[in-house]
Image 1: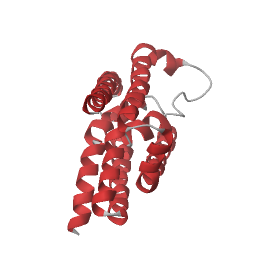
Image 2: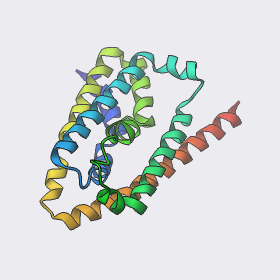
Image 3: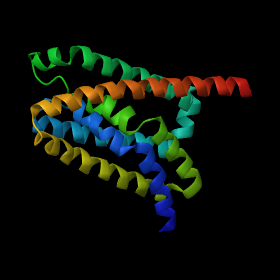
Image 4: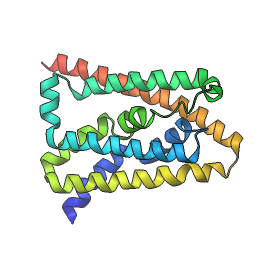
Length: 200
């Protein structure tokens, strides 16, 4: 049991549920309950599939593609930065846009990856697999993603009780923090790249 707890805690910290939940609420602001439920399933499924790939073939994938975690940080950060700026500047226009739900692809990017399964979580899974083995790491992945699913399911409903204006304010603040997280990811990736070059 001790091994499972040790595998669970680092991934719980890396997933940063408390930090990601407001971003999820902000990104899905204005979506219907059914659309939000589909996004939730899509996001959790995407995160789990990515986590499985990393668990069983992470190092091989990185070596085959010739990439590092720092490359992933920069790439993921750029995606988040573009999305956050787009939401801050054009969020109201997108909500008024006709022809369906504009958020139907958010479950894969950025929710599934890189918000839920980001560089920190990916690195943690690789380290946990090497330290604790496949089974404890897999159990910790499932447990953590279940927690994320529960929080994502009930979080928007709790916020809705506070009123539409509060929800819109949280959405804009979340987009601002999303931009800050994106810049931090890009900075960490660049610093890591510079450190690798300096150390070689």
